[in-house]
Image (cartoon, rainbow, N blue to C red):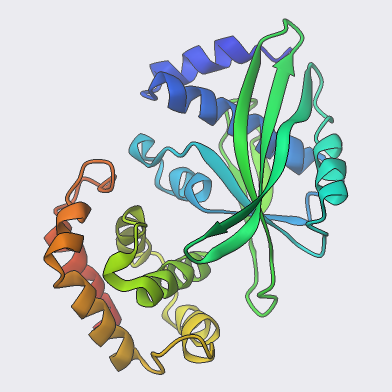
Length: 266
């Protein structure tokens, strides 16, 4: 029997703060429900949930789930049908609360919903889901087993590859430069730089950067020049030094130099 409150207390014991523990439990249950549903091949998980799971670092905890639908509509009625499909675990009910919101951020367009999960004792938690549409079918999605609080089996789902995540984060930095507010991405890329296949990453750079008419950089030299300019911006680098951004706990100057060195080796 699922006891949400007991699961939250366990995550607090594992080092999560109260809010992050609630989010972690809600995310785990959603991931498990997706993996157990008939739509498990129509979803790929991305963003902070993947980074937290890959790094095993509590400091990379995130408050929401980012996912893309694969060959599945983002229409409101399709989203509600997706939520109904999540009611496949014994002892909990899943429902959407609030409105479905259009989502437009720096380099992202999708929809946002809030999910409420209630156990048999009436204990409820909520979490935010940001939904997009997977369009890069030239990039293979990876199978990944999330280690979750719900059971020992975990949740096996499709996720963005390390190379795809790195390329997406780098593309955003190139587009917005020192105006970018995605500071955690820098530390994500530094971590991912040790876990990517160079040839696969170069393919992703072609898709996300070189062959994108919106992008100015057409080769690795252009990328390095742009990234160097960003990292020389004093206002930007000062924001990188905040504790909220630096989840890795590695000096930001080491991180920025490491990223430039990585790009030079490509």
